[in-house]
Each structure stands twice: as structure tokens, then as C-alpha cells.
Length: 195
Image 1: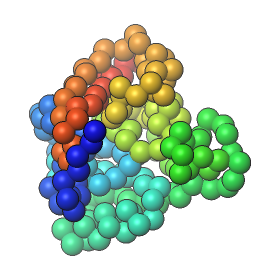
Image 2: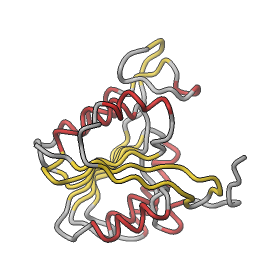
Image 3: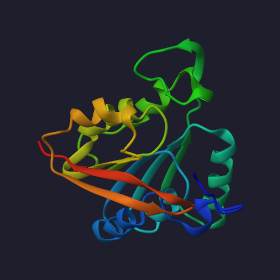
Image 4: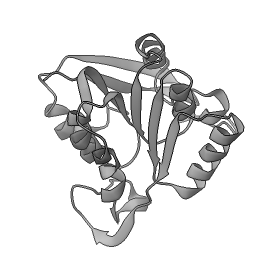
């Protein structure tokens, strides 16, 4: 059973919605000259913006986008490129689909391919915590510099097993435990990208 804090939003605390131990690791890893791309926005967007030179964040939900955009403006954050890419179409069932019932039949192709605007090896970290995660992971790999990391949140979900198996040979750091807003534990995995 899940227990949500009443009226809690991760943007209130400016922290990523990942296990606490993974947050602690990120605080040590991130440096002021780094660049981060994230699929899915929120407290993580503000967290990254306070620690790195550039954040690119793509969001699929207009209502949530408006709330996070407002927080970015209120906090005078200027190093964040924040983009809305809503899902499209009906009856889609390809690699850019999402397993969430509400979005079945929608294509997240534009959302996933947002990262393709950047050169290979551009980012120090790509955080995947949004929709169509296996496709996001596939597009992200070449965009991460050698030695940088790919983060998958909720990595314990079986739906991501095939995507995770493709990264089996890479060094990884796993964090399992509680995080903000929930009492049940979950997993985040960081893969170090090597060329």
C-alpha cells in the first residue's frame, strides 16, 4: 500500500523523487560544470539547476509542466531549458509507447527524440523518470559522455527488464529504499557509460 503526503509536491522541497540514498549519491557526483538531461520533471529539475551549469528537461503533462515552469520562474532559474512534448495520436503501439493505461495508444516519439537535438557525448547525466522509458534509455546512451551516467528510476519494474538487460555489461550502482512522498521502497539504477 502507498501512502502519499497530503498536498506534497516534489517541487516544494527541490529534490528528485528517487530513493534518498540515490539523492545522496547525486549530491556527491554533480559538479557545477556538468550538463544534465531529464525525462520527466519536478523537484529534480530544481535540484539539478542548483548544482550544474545546464539542465534540459522534457515533460509530457501540460498541467504539471505549468506548475514546474511557474516554480522555475519564481525561483529565477535561468540555466534550464524546459520543454513540453505531449503525446500524440491514437492506436499507436510501437517503441515510443507507454505502458501506463491512461496513455495507451499514444506516441511519445517527439518526447523521446528531444534529446536527439544534442551532440553525442554532451551530457554528464541523463535521468529517465518519465514516459516511454525503454525508448528514452535507447536514445540517451550515445548522448552521455564517457564516464557519465544513465539513471533509471523505478528500475524494479518488470516492464524495464529488457531495456536493463541491454546494459548488463556496464558498471552500475543500485539504490533500493524509501524516498520522498512514499513509504514503500523502490529502486534507482545508475549505469556508467563507457565507449
